[in-house]
Amino acid sequence: MRILLLLFLSLSISGMSNTKIFGSAPNAINQYVYVSGIEDYLTNTESIIYTTSVNEKGQFLIELNNSDIEEVVIRIKNSYAHLYVQNDTKYFIEFPEESIDAINYFSGSETEILFFNLDSTDINYKILGFEAWMDDVMADLYILKDVEPTKFIDGVLKFKAEVQKEYANDTSMFFKDYVRYSLGKTIDNIYYFGAPSKETKYDFFIKNSPILYKNSAYMAYINDFYDQYLFQLNKEIRDPLIQSIYNSSASNMLQAISFDSLVPNMELTELVALKIIQQEYNSNRLPKNNLISITNQIRMNTANAQSEIIAENLIEQFYTLIEGDPFPVMKLTEEIELKPAENRYLYIHFFDPENPNSLSEISALRRLYEKYNSHIDFVTIYLNQRTETSDFARRVISGIKWEYYALDYGHSIWKSLNIGSFPYYILVKDNLQIKGLPALGPTPNGVYETIERTFHDIKLGKG
Image (cartoon, rainbow, N blue to C red; front, side):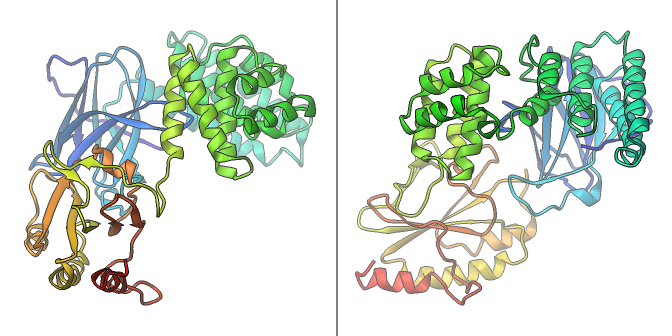
């Protein structure tokens, strides 16, 4: 994250919440603004904690009640930015115009927000200043690493001493921990002659330290330290650990990890186990169903609330629908469920009504609807991004002759059905079996295929 610091005339505004963010997004008038907290830094799962919108003047206000320093994510349209909030503080920020029109839905595109009138005691100011200082020093030092290693080591030691002196009197433990683990990740992980060993780093950074789940620098260090850890373990630990996965036994897996000298307690043992599970699930080396089962056992049996949250988020990430799976029934409104009617198919269309291509897309869908609606139901769903629908979007939507729904960013459907881009299509049979995920669209793809052949077969009773 890179945020520019500017000076701005301070405004005097009072209110009930203890943290206020006064924002400007001149290119996002009437767009919704979503603020999310980060549930954990292993899965990077976000949860929405505040929603507002950009007014006609391009301004928005976020009001949060918080007591500790917390990193939040602000999303507007398809852009997002990270910042820290601290208690009883006012922030003045701007989303630059050129960053608003990113195309990546839900994942989005990270943007540089501007901070105005940021106080020198604020956590953002201090972190940004430290990171800029460290980047400048390391850019100069790194070129010496191989050609003049003695100068490199002397420079590293001098920089660490200067950092310690500079922040010795800082009263924020969050910031001091952030500095400590940022130095560890950036400098101590560089391989050079005389660099600290794995055991030395463990003793200094991990052994007697609490797990700082909400400190991104700490969690980044832990993620690096235990990266691909299954293959760092010696054979006497790795073999029983792998066997425990084949046996779907969480207790045996945790027991095996606990024998490692670089894992000091059960709390970190669970975190390391979940880290191993995450990486092995994505590697396809070990049975995925067993990894899911072990994650669920940890979720149900842990005494640590954070381990439970991480396990829940991992399970949610692991669960990916594929063609042939049962379709999860979800509600579009309080009364209406998204599911096929008896003896009919359901063709679900997700799209962006603001996209210029959506006019031709709806036109092609309308021709299919008129031809096959006696056997197939259509439903269109789009992301509700604006407080007021644009003229172009209204024109597009007016061409839809079947049911359509605008759903908010926080609706469960986007994550449950893995919707990451538009347009996107799903075909579901009346027995709730998914027949196409993603299904073909109404217009030719790269190999000139469309959904019409499938619709024709359904009409003839071949589906």
